Image 1 (cartoon, rainbow, N blue to C red):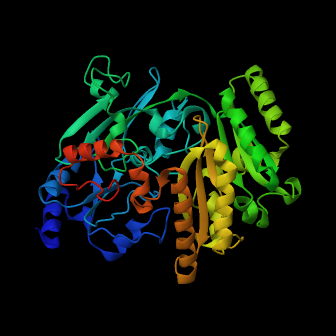
Image 2: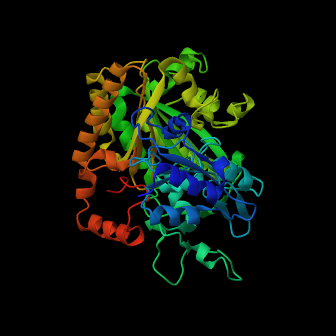
Image 3: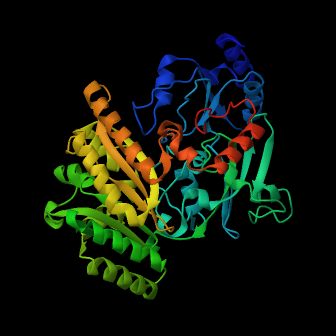
Length: 494
């Protein structure tokens, strides 16, 4: 077994000493996820991966070395939801130097990018050609595409088009032994036709590497589907409901999804708006005092006739359920007026920074942790009530902890629900409250059979795996085949 000094020496040889670090401060900085302070696993060595103009890089060499000596290895993009926590130590690969947008094809409507390219940069490149990703996440420049498809990336458009992982046409993946394989459309890249579709002459293996937390291989390149779109085709609305109307909210969401004409529905509660209203970012007089649930809704319409049909249907459903139209939120948080205010459009989806939706809350409430899961829309009321009860019991249901929900309706009659708690990571009592709450969420969620998306699934106990029965056994066999030494993000799968 190699010593740490021997490992560092070999990595210096592969990528150069400027890109290798064992500095304790670097390790602390790189450990952070959206569950700040909750998981304190540190890497032994950090390696920054950089590619040249043609997309050449050293990932394959590093994997061969790590596999030969059974060194755990985790790939990290930007600030994520837990998959990049090195639960077993070892190497942490900073992928953000593999950031090239390699091709935008406006005719066949696809984009090819390296796995470390920021989603923000991909959107920018697509906009130059009049395109966008069907799932339009606007988290800002920190989030990278490889991480987004590894762990349930979301964005506007999820109600109609699905997750960012559903946009994947092809992948280039480096396996644990250093071998590079191309899947789906990228398997066709060397032909005259090029990467025009994901179906090839073999079974579709793309799903083996999407939503896999980097446990089957490290993604090097991604080919994504794009659609024609312009910002002026997207029309923003917000309807608000009282706390005692959650059952009506649930029913109205079901009705909206059935029609398949809503581009996106973003479900939040009043805690998300408490501090922004206190700071005067929203005019309280224009938001009902008893308004609790906010349904931020986007319609995609290319002309006034299409908009009139979709808007009439959407308003009928919300209003018949007792919802109240609140343009104050739609204009200032989502639409054209947000851009006029210099907030770069859809600022509530920019998580951090002075214009990010978390910025206001963090100024008052501290750092945050989040749990993320999916379940049928028909259980929204039950799950929200359970979470509120847990937060009350743990002493977290107050403005200081801003215990908000930030959730996304999916086309599958499900909801990707994110529970937030803001807390002081340097206060042991506050951290204790947080851990107790997360344990309660884990218990009632596992009992009902949610699909976890964050934080790292392995922290949720054996129940999510055991429930899969023989399927889980098959996945473990595949993992053993492609990664016999279990070096790829060990602990994330089993």
